[in-house]
Length: 462
Image 1 (cartoon, rainbow, N blue to C red):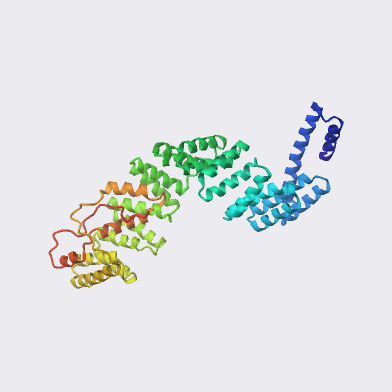
Image 2: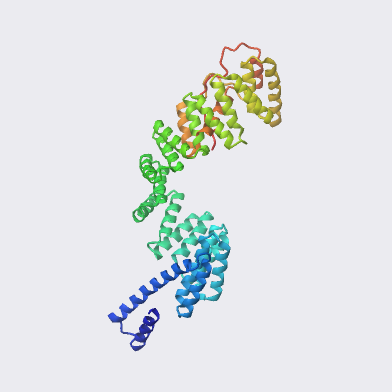
Protein backbone atom coordinates (compact mmCIF):
# COMPACT_ATOMS: atom_id res chain seq x y z
CA UNK A 1 0.00 0.00 0.00
CA UNK A 2 2.86 2.37 0.80
CA UNK A 3 4.35 1.79 -2.65
CA UNK A 4 0.96 2.32 -4.31
CA UNK A 5 0.41 5.58 -2.42
CA UNK A 6 3.85 6.80 -3.45
CA UNK A 7 3.16 5.99 -7.07
CA UNK A 8 -0.21 7.76 -6.89
CA UNK A 9 1.42 10.87 -5.48
CA UNK A 10 4.07 10.83 -8.19
CA UNK A 11 1.34 10.53 -10.85
CA UNK A 12 -0.55 13.46 -9.37
CA UNK A 13 2.64 15.54 -9.26
CA UNK A 14 3.35 14.77 -12.92
CA UNK A 15 -0.23 15.66 -13.90
CA UNK A 16 -0.14 19.07 -12.27
CA UNK A 17 2.96 20.11 -10.38
CA UNK A 18 1.56 23.44 -9.23
CA UNK A 19 -1.74 22.11 -7.95
CA UNK A 20 -1.81 21.42 -4.24
CA UNK A 21 -5.36 20.38 -3.46
CA UNK A 22 -6.74 18.56 -0.44
CA UNK A 23 -6.43 15.13 -2.01
CA UNK A 24 -2.71 15.53 -2.59
CA UNK A 25 -2.16 16.80 0.96
CA UNK A 26 -4.17 13.93 2.41
CA UNK A 27 -2.11 11.47 0.37
CA UNK A 28 1.12 12.96 1.67
CA UNK A 29 -0.12 12.64 5.27
CA UNK A 30 -1.11 9.02 4.63
CA UNK A 31 2.31 8.25 3.18
CA UNK A 32 4.06 9.79 6.19
CA UNK A 33 1.86 7.89 8.63
CA UNK A 34 2.35 4.64 6.70
CA UNK A 35 6.10 5.26 6.70
CA UNK A 36 6.11 5.62 10.48
CA UNK A 37 4.03 2.49 11.03
CA UNK A 38 6.08 0.32 8.67
CA UNK A 39 9.34 1.67 10.13
CA UNK A 40 8.25 0.92 13.69
CA UNK A 41 6.92 -2.53 12.75
CA UNK A 42 10.14 -3.35 10.87
CA UNK A 43 12.32 -2.40 13.83
CA UNK A 44 10.18 -4.37 16.29
CA UNK A 45 10.07 -7.38 14.00
CA UNK A 46 13.79 -7.31 13.28
CA UNK A 47 14.72 -7.46 16.97
CA UNK A 48 12.38 -10.37 17.73
CA UNK A 49 12.12 -12.45 14.53
CA UNK A 50 15.05 -14.64 15.60
CA UNK A 51 15.02 -15.50 19.31
CA UNK A 52 18.75 -16.11 19.63
CA UNK A 53 20.07 -14.05 16.73
CA UNK A 54 18.71 -10.52 16.49
CA UNK A 55 21.28 -9.65 13.81
CA UNK A 56 19.81 -12.24 11.45
CA UNK A 57 16.40 -10.69 12.03
CA UNK A 58 17.67 -7.23 11.13
CA UNK A 59 19.35 -8.58 7.99
CA UNK A 60 16.15 -10.35 6.86
CA UNK A 61 14.02 -7.23 7.34
CA UNK A 62 16.57 -5.04 5.52
CA UNK A 63 16.69 -7.37 2.49
CA UNK A 64 12.87 -7.67 2.43
CA UNK A 65 12.43 -3.88 2.44
CA UNK A 66 15.03 -3.44 -0.31
CA UNK A 67 13.27 -6.09 -2.43
CA UNK A 68 10.01 -4.19 -1.95
CA UNK A 69 11.61 -1.00 -3.20
CA UNK A 70 11.62 0.66 0.24
CA UNK A 71 15.29 1.70 0.34
CA UNK A 72 14.61 4.60 2.72
CA UNK A 73 12.99 2.29 5.27
CA UNK A 74 15.80 -0.23 4.81
CA UNK A 75 18.23 2.57 5.69
CA UNK A 76 16.38 3.30 8.95
CA UNK A 77 16.50 -0.37 9.91
CA UNK A 78 20.23 -0.43 9.14
CA UNK A 79 20.73 2.40 11.62
CA UNK A 80 18.51 0.52 14.11
CA UNK A 81 20.82 -2.50 13.68
CA UNK A 82 23.82 -0.37 14.64
CA UNK A 83 21.87 0.99 17.63
CA UNK A 84 21.16 -2.60 18.67
CA UNK A 85 24.91 -3.26 18.80
CA UNK A 86 25.34 -0.09 20.87
CA UNK A 87 22.70 -1.21 23.39
CA UNK A 88 24.46 -4.56 23.64
CA UNK A 89 27.71 -2.62 24.22
CA UNK A 90 29.23 -4.25 21.14
CA UNK A 91 30.80 -0.99 20.04
CA UNK A 92 33.26 -2.54 17.60
CA UNK A 93 30.43 -4.13 15.62
CA UNK A 94 28.40 -0.91 15.80
CA UNK A 95 31.32 1.06 14.37
CA UNK A 96 31.91 -1.57 11.67
CA UNK A 97 28.21 -1.56 10.72
CA UNK A 98 27.94 2.21 10.53
CA UNK A 99 31.14 2.58 8.51
CA UNK A 100 30.03 -0.07 6.03
CA UNK A 101 26.68 1.67 5.50
CA UNK A 102 28.48 5.00 5.20
CA UNK A 103 30.53 3.63 2.29
CA UNK A 104 27.54 1.94 0.62
CA UNK A 105 24.99 4.75 0.73
CA UNK A 106 25.85 8.47 0.84
CA UNK A 107 22.37 9.12 2.24
CA UNK A 108 23.44 7.30 5.39
CA UNK A 109 26.50 9.48 6.00
CA UNK A 110 24.89 12.03 8.39
CA UNK A 111 23.07 9.31 10.38
CA UNK A 112 26.11 7.06 10.55
CA UNK A 113 28.47 9.93 11.43
CA UNK A 114 26.19 11.10 14.24
CA UNK A 115 26.09 7.63 15.77
CA UNK A 116 29.82 7.09 15.28
CA UNK A 117 30.51 10.38 17.04
CA UNK A 118 28.34 9.24 19.95
CA UNK A 119 30.15 5.88 20.20
CA UNK A 120 33.64 7.37 20.05
CA UNK A 121 32.73 9.98 22.68
CA UNK A 122 31.58 7.32 25.14
CA UNK A 123 34.75 5.36 24.50
CA UNK A 124 36.81 8.44 25.35
CA UNK A 125 38.14 8.89 21.80
CA UNK A 126 37.32 12.60 21.61
CA UNK A 127 39.37 13.21 18.45
CA UNK A 128 37.30 10.76 16.39
CA UNK A 129 34.11 11.90 18.12
CA UNK A 130 34.78 15.47 17.00
CA UNK A 131 35.76 14.29 13.51
CA UNK A 132 32.47 12.48 12.90
CA UNK A 133 30.44 15.24 14.54
CA UNK A 134 31.99 17.68 12.07
CA UNK A 135 31.20 15.28 9.20
CA UNK A 136 27.55 15.08 10.24
CA UNK A 137 27.35 18.88 10.62
CA UNK A 138 28.88 19.40 7.17
CA UNK A 139 26.04 17.38 5.64
CA UNK A 140 23.40 19.14 7.72
CA UNK A 141 24.28 22.18 9.83
CA UNK A 142 20.89 21.95 11.54
CA UNK A 143 21.43 18.39 12.80
CA UNK A 144 20.71 18.95 16.51
CA UNK A 145 22.23 15.63 17.62
CA UNK A 146 25.44 16.33 15.70
CA UNK A 147 25.65 19.79 17.28
CA UNK A 148 25.19 18.26 20.75
CA UNK A 149 27.92 15.69 20.01
CA UNK A 150 30.35 18.42 18.94
CA UNK A 151 29.41 20.47 22.00
CA UNK A 152 30.15 17.46 24.20
CA UNK A 153 33.60 17.17 22.65
CA UNK A 154 34.33 20.82 23.44
CA UNK A 155 32.98 20.37 26.97
CA UNK A 156 35.29 17.39 27.52
CA UNK A 157 38.24 19.56 26.45
CA UNK A 158 37.22 22.28 28.90
CA UNK A 159 36.00 24.71 26.23
CA UNK A 160 32.79 25.46 28.08
CA UNK A 161 31.83 28.65 26.25
CA UNK A 162 32.23 26.97 22.86
CA UNK A 163 30.16 24.05 24.09
CA UNK A 164 27.43 26.42 25.30
CA UNK A 165 27.22 28.07 21.88
CA UNK A 166 26.75 24.72 20.17
CA UNK A 167 24.08 23.65 22.66
CA UNK A 168 22.29 26.95 21.98
CA UNK A 169 22.52 26.28 18.26
CA UNK A 170 21.15 22.76 18.74
CA UNK A 171 18.16 24.15 20.64
CA UNK A 172 17.60 26.62 17.81
CA UNK A 173 17.61 23.79 15.26
CA UNK A 174 15.37 21.56 17.38
CA UNK A 175 13.49 23.36 20.14
CA UNK A 176 12.54 20.15 21.96
CA UNK A 177 16.05 18.65 21.97
CA UNK A 178 16.22 17.72 25.65
CA UNK A 179 19.86 16.65 25.46
CA UNK A 180 20.88 20.12 24.26
CA UNK A 181 18.83 21.82 26.99
CA UNK A 182 20.22 19.60 29.74
CA UNK A 183 23.83 19.94 28.59
CA UNK A 184 23.45 23.70 28.21
CA UNK A 185 22.24 23.88 31.81
CA UNK A 186 25.17 21.77 33.03
CA UNK A 187 27.69 23.90 31.13
CA UNK A 188 26.11 27.08 32.53
CA UNK A 189 26.37 25.67 36.05
CA UNK A 190 30.03 24.85 35.51
CA UNK A 191 30.62 28.43 34.35
CA UNK A 192 28.95 29.80 37.50
CA UNK A 193 25.88 31.07 35.66
CA UNK A 194 23.48 29.61 38.21
CA UNK A 195 20.52 31.73 37.10
CA UNK A 196 20.60 30.42 33.53
CA UNK A 197 21.24 26.86 34.72
CA UNK A 198 18.34 26.96 37.17
CA UNK A 199 15.98 28.40 34.55
CA UNK A 200 16.85 25.62 32.09
CA UNK A 201 16.60 22.85 34.68
CA UNK A 202 13.19 24.12 35.81
CA UNK A 203 12.00 24.08 32.17
CA UNK A 204 13.24 20.52 31.86
CA UNK A 205 11.45 19.62 35.08
CA UNK A 206 8.21 20.92 33.58
CA UNK A 207 8.75 18.75 30.48
CA UNK A 208 10.02 15.59 32.23
CA UNK A 209 8.83 15.95 35.84
CA UNK A 210 9.78 12.39 36.80
CA UNK A 211 13.47 12.75 35.93
CA UNK A 212 15.50 12.27 39.10
CA UNK A 213 18.60 13.64 37.35
CA UNK A 214 16.88 16.98 36.73
CA UNK A 215 15.60 17.20 40.32
CA UNK A 216 19.11 16.49 41.60
CA UNK A 217 20.55 19.21 39.39
CA UNK A 218 18.00 21.77 40.65
CA UNK A 219 18.87 20.91 44.24
CA UNK A 220 22.59 21.08 43.49
CA UNK A 221 22.30 24.50 41.83
CA UNK A 222 20.47 25.89 44.86
CA UNK A 223 23.09 24.37 47.17
CA UNK A 224 26.00 25.71 45.09
CA UNK A 225 24.49 29.21 45.05
CA UNK A 226 24.13 29.27 48.85
CA UNK A 227 20.34 28.84 48.97
CA UNK A 228 20.35 26.06 51.53
CA UNK A 229 16.63 26.06 52.34
CA UNK A 230 15.63 25.76 48.68
CA UNK A 231 18.26 23.04 48.22
CA UNK A 232 16.85 21.21 51.24
CA UNK A 233 13.35 21.30 49.71
CA UNK A 234 14.50 19.78 46.41
CA UNK A 235 16.74 17.19 48.01
CA UNK A 236 13.77 16.07 50.10
CA UNK A 237 11.67 15.80 46.93
CA UNK A 238 14.43 13.69 45.44
CA UNK A 239 14.75 11.58 48.58
CA UNK A 240 11.03 10.81 48.42
CA UNK A 241 11.58 9.36 44.92
CA UNK A 242 14.79 7.48 45.70
CA UNK A 243 14.57 6.94 49.48
CA UNK A 244 17.50 4.51 49.64
CA UNK A 245 20.02 6.59 47.68
CA UNK A 246 22.98 7.14 50.06
CA UNK A 247 24.35 10.08 48.08
CA UNK A 248 21.09 12.03 48.34
CA UNK A 249 20.84 11.30 52.08
CA UNK A 250 24.42 12.49 52.59
CA UNK A 251 23.71 15.72 50.70
CA UNK A 252 20.66 16.29 52.88
CA UNK A 253 22.89 15.88 55.91
CA UNK A 254 25.35 18.40 54.50
CA UNK A 255 22.61 20.95 53.78
CA UNK A 256 21.15 20.58 57.29
CA UNK A 257 24.64 21.15 58.68
CA UNK A 258 24.84 24.44 56.80
CA UNK A 259 21.59 25.40 58.47
CA UNK A 260 23.21 24.48 61.83
CA UNK A 261 20.74 21.66 62.39
CA UNK A 262 23.23 19.09 63.65
CA UNK A 263 20.56 16.65 64.81
CA UNK A 264 19.09 16.27 61.33
CA UNK A 265 22.58 16.29 59.80
CA UNK A 266 23.51 13.33 62.01
CA UNK A 267 20.25 11.55 61.14
CA UNK A 268 20.77 11.79 57.38
CA UNK A 269 24.46 10.86 57.55
CA UNK A 270 23.58 7.83 59.65
CA UNK A 271 20.86 6.82 57.15
CA UNK A 272 23.36 7.22 54.32
CA UNK A 273 25.81 4.99 56.18
CA UNK A 274 23.07 2.39 56.68
CA UNK A 275 22.58 2.04 52.93
CA UNK A 276 26.25 2.40 51.96
CA UNK A 277 28.61 1.54 54.85
CA UNK A 278 31.68 1.89 52.63
CA UNK A 279 31.41 5.62 51.87
CA UNK A 280 34.49 7.17 53.43
CA UNK A 281 33.06 10.69 53.42
CA UNK A 282 30.07 9.70 55.53
CA UNK A 283 32.16 7.48 57.81
CA UNK A 284 34.60 10.28 58.58
CA UNK A 285 31.79 12.75 59.31
CA UNK A 286 30.07 10.36 61.70
CA UNK A 287 33.34 9.53 63.43
CA UNK A 288 34.09 13.21 63.95
CA UNK A 289 30.57 13.72 65.28
CA UNK A 290 31.05 11.07 67.98
CA UNK A 291 34.52 12.36 68.86
CA UNK A 292 33.16 15.88 69.21
CA UNK A 293 30.44 14.61 71.52
CA UNK A 294 33.01 12.58 73.51
CA UNK A 295 31.47 9.22 72.57
CA UNK A 296 34.82 7.65 71.78
CA UNK A 297 33.67 4.02 71.94
CA UNK A 298 31.22 4.67 69.08
CA UNK A 299 33.80 6.66 67.14
CA UNK A 300 36.23 3.73 67.31
CA UNK A 301 33.84 1.52 65.33
CA UNK A 302 33.80 4.01 62.44
CA UNK A 303 37.57 4.51 62.48
CA UNK A 304 38.15 0.78 62.41
CA UNK A 305 35.82 0.51 59.43
CA UNK A 306 37.79 3.24 57.66
CA UNK A 307 41.05 1.42 58.40
CA UNK A 308 39.58 -1.71 56.81
CA UNK A 309 38.45 0.19 53.71
CA UNK A 310 41.72 2.13 53.34
CA UNK A 311 44.38 -0.06 54.99
CA UNK A 312 47.17 2.00 53.44
CA UNK A 313 46.04 5.15 55.28
CA UNK A 314 47.81 5.05 58.65
CA UNK A 315 45.81 8.03 59.97
CA UNK A 316 42.74 5.88 60.58
CA UNK A 317 44.63 3.50 62.86
CA UNK A 318 46.17 6.49 64.63
CA UNK A 319 42.64 7.75 65.25
CA UNK A 320 41.57 4.41 66.68
CA UNK A 321 44.45 4.63 69.15
CA UNK A 322 43.61 8.25 69.94
CA UNK A 323 40.00 7.34 70.75
CA UNK A 324 41.15 4.61 73.12
CA UNK A 325 43.51 7.10 74.76
CA UNK A 326 40.71 9.62 75.17
CA UNK A 327 38.46 7.00 76.69
CA UNK A 328 41.16 6.23 79.29
CA UNK A 329 42.43 2.90 77.91
CA UNK A 330 46.06 3.99 77.67
CA UNK A 331 47.48 0.48 77.50
CA UNK A 332 45.37 -0.48 74.47
CA UNK A 333 46.25 2.83 72.80
CA UNK A 334 49.93 2.08 73.49
CA UNK A 335 49.63 -1.38 71.92
CA UNK A 336 48.02 0.06 68.78
CA UNK A 337 50.71 2.72 68.48
CA UNK A 338 53.37 0.01 68.87
CA UNK A 339 51.77 -2.08 66.12
CA UNK A 340 51.68 0.95 63.82
CA UNK A 341 55.31 1.74 64.61
CA UNK A 342 56.36 -1.83 63.78
CA UNK A 343 54.74 -1.43 60.36
CA UNK A 344 55.73 2.21 59.77
CA UNK A 345 58.97 2.74 61.76
CA UNK A 346 59.65 6.15 60.19
CA UNK A 347 56.19 7.62 60.86
CA UNK A 348 56.93 10.77 62.86
CA UNK A 349 53.40 11.27 64.18
CA UNK A 350 53.28 7.75 65.58
CA UNK A 351 56.64 8.26 67.28
CA UNK A 352 55.39 11.48 68.89
CA UNK A 353 52.32 9.68 70.21
CA UNK A 354 54.49 6.86 71.57
CA UNK A 355 56.73 9.34 73.41
CA UNK A 356 53.73 10.81 75.22
CA UNK A 357 51.82 7.60 75.87
CA UNK A 358 54.92 5.90 77.27
CA UNK A 359 55.58 8.95 79.42
CA UNK A 360 52.05 8.80 80.76
CA UNK A 361 52.36 5.07 81.49
CA UNK A 362 55.65 5.66 83.33
CA UNK A 363 57.76 3.71 80.81
CA UNK A 364 60.86 5.89 81.12
CA UNK A 365 63.19 3.61 79.13
CA UNK A 366 60.73 3.40 76.30
CA UNK A 367 60.36 7.20 76.31
CA UNK A 368 64.10 7.61 75.82
CA UNK A 369 64.11 4.98 73.04
CA UNK A 370 61.30 6.68 71.10
CA UNK A 371 62.75 10.17 71.63
CA UNK A 372 65.98 8.99 69.97
CA UNK A 373 64.02 7.43 67.10
CA UNK A 374 61.92 10.57 66.75
CA UNK A 375 65.02 12.79 66.53
CA UNK A 376 66.46 10.53 63.86
CA UNK A 377 63.22 10.44 61.85
CA UNK A 378 62.84 14.23 62.00
CA UNK A 379 66.40 14.76 60.83
CA UNK A 380 65.85 12.31 57.99
CA UNK A 381 62.97 14.33 56.58
CA UNK A 382 64.21 17.70 57.84
CA UNK A 383 60.97 18.34 59.78
CA UNK A 384 61.19 21.21 62.30
CA UNK A 385 59.92 20.17 65.74
CA UNK A 386 56.38 21.42 66.45
CA UNK A 387 55.87 24.18 68.98
CA UNK A 388 54.43 23.34 72.38
CA UNK A 389 50.74 24.18 72.60
CA UNK A 390 49.84 25.95 75.79
CA UNK A 391 46.48 24.80 77.11
CA UNK A 392 43.83 25.06 74.41
CA UNK A 393 45.38 28.09 72.75
CA UNK A 394 45.37 28.06 68.98
CA UNK A 395 42.80 25.30 68.66
CA UNK A 396 39.60 25.57 66.69
CA UNK A 397 36.52 25.32 68.91
CA UNK A 398 34.91 21.91 68.71
CA UNK A 399 31.57 23.30 67.54
CA UNK A 400 33.23 25.17 64.69
CA UNK A 401 35.45 22.27 63.69
CA UNK A 402 32.59 19.80 63.58
CA UNK A 403 30.45 21.97 61.35
CA UNK A 404 33.36 22.97 59.19
CA UNK A 405 34.43 19.39 58.72
CA UNK A 406 30.96 18.45 57.56
CA UNK A 407 30.85 21.28 55.05
CA UNK A 408 34.33 20.73 53.64
CA UNK A 409 34.18 16.98 53.32
CA UNK A 410 32.47 15.51 50.29
CA UNK A 411 28.92 14.38 51.04
CA UNK A 412 28.89 10.71 51.79
CA UNK A 413 32.32 10.50 53.44
CA UNK A 414 32.36 7.79 56.04
CA UNK A 415 31.99 8.82 59.64
CA UNK A 416 34.69 6.36 60.42
CA UNK A 417 37.17 8.28 58.28
CA UNK A 418 36.34 11.62 59.86
CA UNK A 419 36.65 10.20 63.33
CA UNK A 420 39.98 8.66 62.54
CA UNK A 421 41.19 11.97 61.21
CA UNK A 422 39.88 13.80 64.24
CA UNK A 423 41.58 11.34 66.55
CA UNK A 424 44.84 11.69 64.69
CA UNK A 425 44.59 15.46 64.85
CA UNK A 426 43.98 15.37 68.56
CA UNK A 427 46.73 12.90 69.17
CA UNK A 428 49.22 14.97 67.24
CA UNK A 429 48.39 18.18 69.00
CA UNK A 430 49.91 17.36 72.40
CA UNK A 431 53.18 16.32 70.76
CA UNK A 432 55.88 18.77 71.71
CA UNK A 433 59.37 19.12 70.33
CA UNK A 434 61.84 16.33 70.97
CA UNK A 435 63.58 18.40 73.61
CA UNK A 436 60.32 19.19 75.34
CA UNK A 437 59.39 15.52 75.27
CA UNK A 438 62.72 14.58 76.79
CA UNK A 439 62.24 17.12 79.54
CA UNK A 440 58.81 15.69 80.20
CA UNK A 441 60.38 12.40 81.18
CA UNK A 442 62.20 14.16 84.02
CA UNK A 443 59.55 16.58 85.14
CA UNK A 444 56.48 16.02 87.23
CA UNK A 445 53.33 16.14 85.13
CA UNK A 446 51.14 18.91 86.43
CA UNK A 447 49.56 19.22 82.98
CA UNK A 448 47.60 16.47 81.28
CA UNK A 449 49.43 15.77 78.03
CA UNK A 450 46.32 14.06 76.74
CA UNK A 451 43.82 16.76 77.64
CA UNK A 452 40.77 16.81 75.37
CA UNK A 453 41.94 19.18 72.68
CA UNK A 454 39.28 20.61 70.44
CA UNK A 455 38.78 19.24 66.94
CA UNK A 456 40.87 20.75 64.18
CA UNK A 457 40.39 20.27 60.45
CA UNK A 458 44.13 20.32 59.73
CA UNK A 459 44.24 16.61 59.01
CA UNK A 460 40.75 16.24 57.61
CA UNK A 461 40.66 14.69 54.13
CA UNK A 462 40.21 17.09 51.24
